[in-house]
Length: 485
Ligand code: JFZ
Image (cartoon, rainbow, N blue to C red; front, side, top):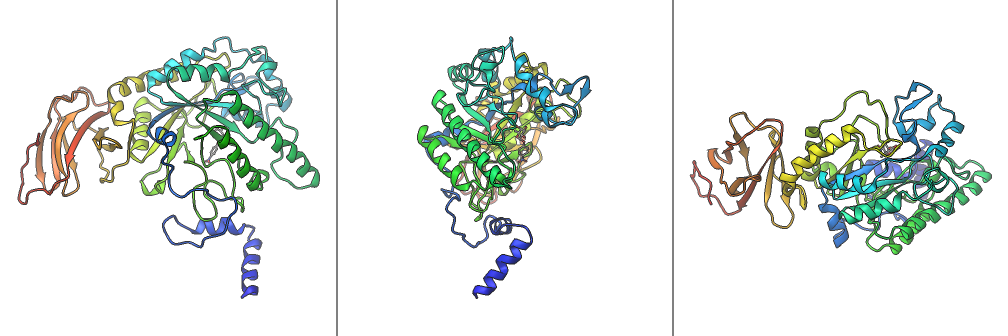
């Protein structure tokens, strides 16, 4: 028995994969799986139910801001165009590291206006904001005691994060701090630990990381959570015990703090989901520039989707090529996220002077106009287990139980065909824009209705219909049914 087990472990080791990762990949969420004893796996099964997490769940819409030294070259170096994500330009062979590492001497964003940013986010309808305190390049937008590579040594010379936190707090928008563990500037950083020297250097880096994180939480105590990144390297994947302890320390510093699944690895180096397939952290952080298709894809976990406006640019790139999204597309992604119990976070990449680009300003205004009328279908809303149909998405308010149909494909004559589950009667049906109006509902087949929506103004703005259903048994033989009000 023992030798069979040893043989199995050996076979796993020979394929180059750790035991944990093999089992995690083979354990689909709801099938029985072998439970592996983990010291640093998931600490909780199921979603958090405390008030802070409930607020997070009810945000619906958020704003991401990627801002740092990369905004200065903006995707170009010496006249050459960089096709990758602008915030990665330092890793481009055509840009010498030394050139990048001197950019902080030019960081002097004279147009930076935190109050204006916060006002814009507010009028777009964002309920939370995530700001890059430090991206992979290692440059800190706050005055850090633990490095010289920060704003205080730039010509700008002052804190960026503090005024931002203050401005967003004042608008009632919760602030989350993005922090890249990977740091291209710190001398102790390693992607792999191969030698004793690597291990020693990495110890200093770990201490530095811990210091910076506790520093941030101390400086900005209204922070609601941390959004981690740059945790995929082999060296970090060995740090289960360190990361677990640090996560506990951070949670002690700000009770209720929200941390996603992109921070710590488990004992076997698995990330996001531990070797038993359980989520590590408060929400799933893997929906990056993509959305789940079905509720099953989310495994019932809390999650957020972070989305770029162009294809893959987070930091400012002066030349957006390829597909650039419309507000219609972004609103559809927002509604789809909410309909699957997630939050949608739209990214902004201000330029080197601190100006928000025209495209983002236009999109924020268009989304804001829509949210102004329709936010009731977003805030506090989530998944409803009714079959999705081609017209759009259902969302449901978690408190009131009101159901919203967000219609992206409204028929030209306004006769919207809707199928609802048996045993549900459509109660009052009205346009969100005009709640006093009752829409005419015509039953055309069993469980199938036409909602007659007459006021269709244009076909390019998603329309919301509110349903207050009753869940009583339907009368047998009722073939034709008017709205019951
Ligand atoms: C990371 C960064 O490298 C990028 O610059 C940006 O900050 C983004 C928000 O995060 O990029 C990733 C990280 C994870 C995945 C893809 C891109 N992922 O899990 O698919």
